[in-house]
Length: 397
Image 1 (cartoon, rainbow, N blue to C red):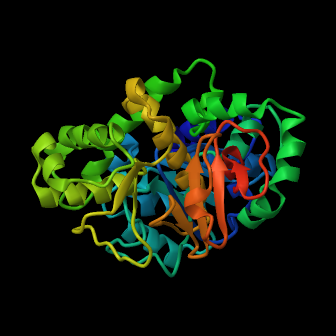
Image 2 (image 1 turned 30 degrees about the horizontal axis):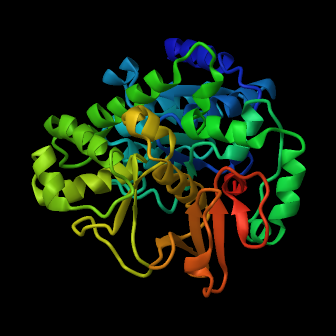
């Protein structure tokens, strides 16, 4: 355990990021068990270490461990927790939990037997962490880490600090909001940078190549993380990557499962299963018509990449501007809103609002007779009436 403590202190002291994500203030850190899930690269580990750094400064006894550490080859989580608590430990934060077989059962035992210990765990969004052999749903509070919003990107890039706006505030006051922002910064310049390389917080590390890292994250998801899914055939990981690149070259699109099956040499039902896994890994987003339930065995109505940065990692020579715009809008809206397709426009939001996404010359003809309809336009700083700058969707969280 002494070696683990040393590793923990090195990790905690290595965190030098000056900014914290808003989610750090939304987590009930004093609850006895919290779970944080999210895609690779979105900052889960950084969040844990920032909180532990804060607790250490307050004089609390903390420990950070990765559950893929060699220590666990001949030690259990429960034994570690018991030993840590007997030596005055208070806060035990564990990363990569999905890499430890039977972790949920041991967490349940720790929760029931060592009530003095505050547990926080993190893991891949691919795994349904609370649906393990031991039910944690009544014990653990679950939180999800997303990538950065455009607003958070501006903050972390040390450009400007701005508030979150409700979608209804953007509808009602977009001219006033946009005018106040554009007088302070060249917003379109920064928005272009964000779409290309601003969704993942490691852009702040000057010595790290952004796209090489993103490519490595994609490969790690395909070649490592997916093997923790029950009944997943890891020998198919290369075909999964091929499937993702096929999607990247044509999204958003109405999938032709037979053609995709031929291109990837995968059975039709396997393709549909893999769509489900890719969405859980936050590589793609499946969107359907309103009130249509889709199981993993049914074809989705439309497929998007999860976020704009993925275009530049998967298919940089063929980035379609229209696809990029819709992907950004869907990505930012989906964090707090229910988003579906719409027959006459691009999206229906919360079964109330209708949104069309386009460039600066986009007109509103096709939605002019629809109540609560709006056009979000790229390449404009300030809008008017129901024509709104698209970049303002980046201020929803």
